[in-house]
Amino acid sequence: MHASLFSTRPPGVGASWGSTVASHGDSIFLGGNEKQMMQNLNDRLAAYLDKVRSLEAANAQLESCIMEWHKKRSHGKRYDFNQFEQSIADMQGQIQDGKINNASVLLQIDNAKLASEEFRLKYEAEKYQREGVQFDIENLRKELDNLTIVTTDLEMEIEGLREEHILRKKDHEADMHEQRSTKDVNVNVKVKATPPEDLTKILAGIREDYEAIIEKNLRGLDVWYKEQTSAASLAVTNSPEQLQNNDKEIKNLKRNFQALEIELQAQLSKKHALENTLSETRAHYASRLQNIQEFISKCEEELSELRHDVRCQSNKYKVLLGIKTRLEREISTYQLLLEGRTDEITRNFESSAKEHTASTDHRLKTVVQDSVDGQVVSTTIHEIHQQE
Image 1 (cartoon, rainbow, N blue to C red):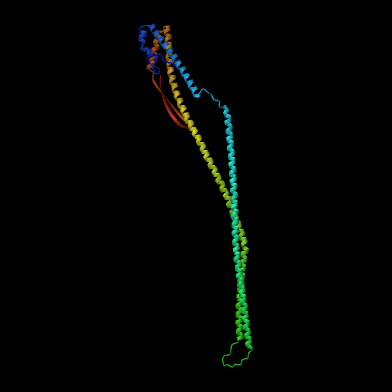
Image 2: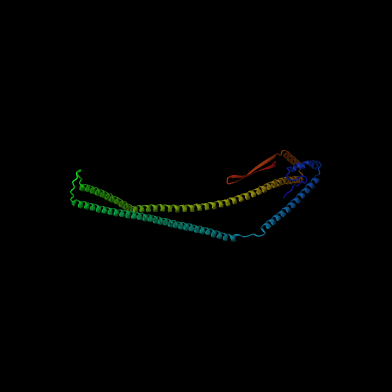
């Protein structure tokens, strides 16, 4: 808003007012032309006031431009969104209720699927059990038919042996009858030979041998028949117990298999639900991370703009501070001139000239670090030259 009173040098260069006036000191004080100096100061003060007025007008124009820009950006309207917040909150509540209802419906569907799968497994188990029992019954029927055939064969063989025994007995009786009939015939034959053998004893021995053989065969057949019948009866009596034990074992195995199948289905459903939850969580956190990154980038842009504004304000402040200092010195000099204290003005000029020659250049380095969650994101270094 302010400008320097010096027309020869721009503001911010670092020269003081005293050095400028000191360069003209010979023409002002040595010549003694106080009226010319007063006229010069009045002209410079008038120029300063004109400059101040022009800067105020420029500031007013800038403010009006800024207001117009804000009006154009906002279109001159201010929307009140409070009336929509309640409807948005209600819709969000309805959406949340819908999500809960959908989750409960999905849970009921999963439970129904598990129950139907359990009934299907039970049906399959009963079906397999029925098929196994039918297979066992068919095998037992085949065994029974085989045993019936073997029993029939044994009975036929026994009948054949009995008939053979009867036939041999009849043949033996016929032989005995013939021997007895020939014994009644008296034949007187005198033959000089070895004494004949007793046929009765021979036939009796043969008969005894045959009877012993027949008895032995009968005993062997009887023992074989008893062994076969006992083995068949044991097989028949032991098969129901073995079948019952096998059925129990099959039932236990099928029950264990069914329980394991149900547990497997439950674990698969749980795994599927956890995978869905994991994917939803990843998507949610990815969106949140993206929003955070966008927010960080926006904050960095605002921070850079703020730093630029701060630097501009700092430079303006320094310029205005220099202008203020020079104006104060000029005003004090003007007052001294009005009061006629020229010696004090000369001393002030000399001291200001010495301060100007003894002024040093200082550098102020500013390091700004931006950190997010304890981590340094960016580092900016600024150097500011200061003259004292």
